[in-house]
Image (cartoon, rainbow, N blue to C red; front, side, top):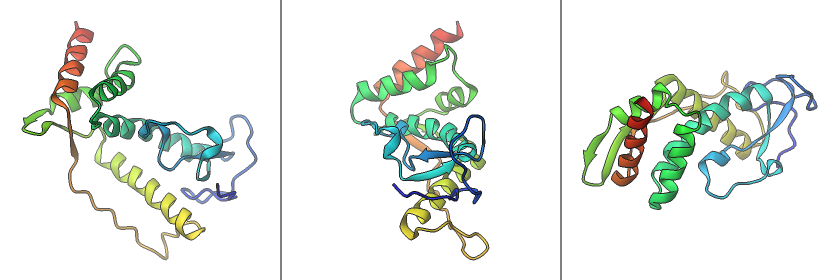
Length: 176
């Protein structure tokens, strides 16, 4: 793990970890545990980020983890991951309802729109780009000297039709 003193995302000076301090350092997992089937422990991150940036990225990590796991070949794993994320508060947030409502039946499975806004998708790609730059170069990305090019091909993904059917039934039951 890189023992850095500057947040690679917002470029603030990191402070020693203290309660309720947005600038205190926090272990950053560039590829979040929510996207992985085998979790790492807190000390196995790539670098430190400020608590504010790490928290903002974590909210997006949860959503990215959802659609990453939804594409698994293991239907049970995919369903359980979707169920845990979408139904954890006994309600389905609007973003997931919109994802389900966007479903299109295709030969290879069900195509659904990503449950992210355009600005959230760009923000997440910005986190990943800055994090990768930091890991590869050992220094913080400088936007006044470099340009980051982000290219998106599709804003949708394919999930298994059986997983989608179960998730759609759960959504219907919660609305009743």
